[in-house]
Image (cartoon, rainbow over all chains, first blue to last red; front, side, top):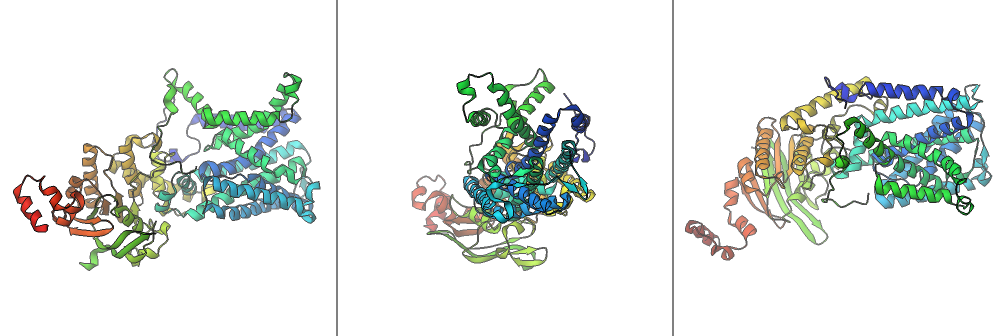
Length: 358
Length: 280
């Protein structure tokens, strides 16, 4: 059991709360920096995807987990970012400028989509964002002069002012730097007044308003930031795949993103990463597992969808706080051994309020 | 007397469809007093609160308020500006940020005092750290004032009802208000907690110099802390005056207990019967 002796208020503000944080996160960072020499090429590519999805997950987590606004069309922001990056890179714009444009355009679209969020909540917002997702997919498929339509579009290697990133290792480091920056940005935001305003809106709009929080401003801001991060992830995604087509940004992708944060743990930054690891490793695990199943089951189409569905239902039923919630429980168990009680994480149910269509 | 006026409601009326929730209500709140609204359920007390905190807009009438830049028309202000004008409120059914710690809730109360921009927040510059430390100091003052030290890091979702009531008041105090609106501060509290609440309301008035406007049903609390009381019924004003005056007002007695004829047989003291008969 660790007791933190607090002697000044700064300790509650710092990102690393104690020596353990510094030790473990430094270790993680060292592992990630050494990854190109430790992991074989295939797994490094998977790790790159984990980082890319983490960035998108951070964005969606900010929106759904911390502001309480759901988006069923988040793949559309990914698509806007990816296509902006593809078109600009192919036109010869250097990577950093294209990336800023991809994030900016995506954020601008997010701002527009955020406007209905000022009026509708819960499931209705889900429907509004869902239909927005379909619109974007359709635009990407029909606007052939720019996007190349359903035939898709190839994208050149990232070019940072003349320094072209040819290898997977180099691109991995690029993704790592962007992911670390995005994570620090989100963590900073969450410990500042802006992040607290988001949390306030999530838990009670009416009292957030009477605390002086401008609901319209913060809701659209949350949408814009979330979409901006999805745009950055989309840009990296386009470079990683080197070929994009509209069907990569359809409703299944949106559901994957939502699945990712729910499985990871809604309302925690860790959840975005754990969810991304789940989302990337799961298909591999299913592929490995398939060989041991009878052919009638193992080769059946839709096996992955079935397993994803079962996993999602299991999480919602048994571990609503996701993988991160499970980790918290394990950690508490180890810290308090042997005094851990089963009900420690049970919250009393509140019967005072209706569910407010959350 | 006019120069110490803090808030003034003139001829307020609100109509929801066919229901006239508040009908032609006028009252003044002076600086440094505890002003209480009483009345049976559905009298329109909370609606008056919601008018002041701009959740509703009055159908007719207006509210003026002494803001930082002199007298302003409160009814023209958008709802999110009310807090920065120095009006903080609590809610009847507790509207805390449940999945956050008590400290986090109090820091949200400091929102109107934020000075940093979004980009400063994202990079967490030295200026942000400085304002965060200041906000924390203010929050700690409120924690000391209301004795919430033990609950500082607990999640609101795990706190008992009585403590939540106090946390909500603490959050309102964190905004450094000039006028504090308390919607039934003692509802759901036991006798001891209600006594504590009475002390705190007196301290808020005397030590912090904050004007308090509250809705309350517990008449012992009302008569202990209030300077003036306004009784309402069915959206209309019944009586206004000191707690004692209002309690003995025949119209108020009728609103609470029914008409005098109904209850006269229940009275034991003949003296009271005499005054009731006059009212009838």
